[in-house]
Image (cartoon, rainbow, N blue to C red; front, side, top):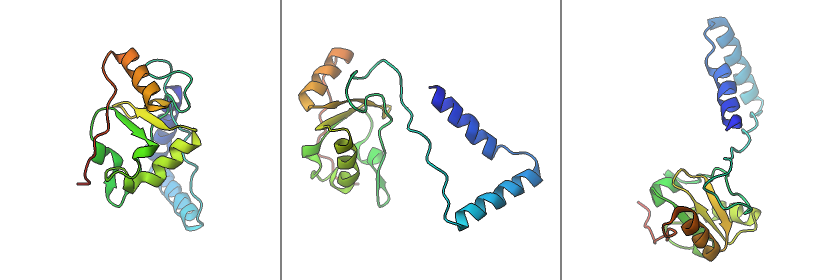
Length: 152
């Protein structure tokens, strides 16, 4: 969580300038960088510590990406609660618009599936069976099943 705090402090230093001249200088510098095609580097991915995650699996504890397709966000399509997303399901109507982003994320972690917690952090990656067992062992409840969802 230290990384999240440091990111918030750094962002605060940029947006909370109260001196009008300093704010104008900041705005001019940012506009010049944008005009030159210079973009600030993205923040480092945030990760959570030990807890409700499948220790030892690639991506466990990472914040799961929230891809967009047109004006739809994955969160809006899949809704609240945990998600079990399998590579084999990426052609489903709900996931197809996001398939390239999801496949890229899964393949980068050599994972067949990912179980995403309701707070959108990764519980773990691996096989669906291993994720289901790990989730049930940790939470005492059955792992989620991603039902086909139609795009709203």
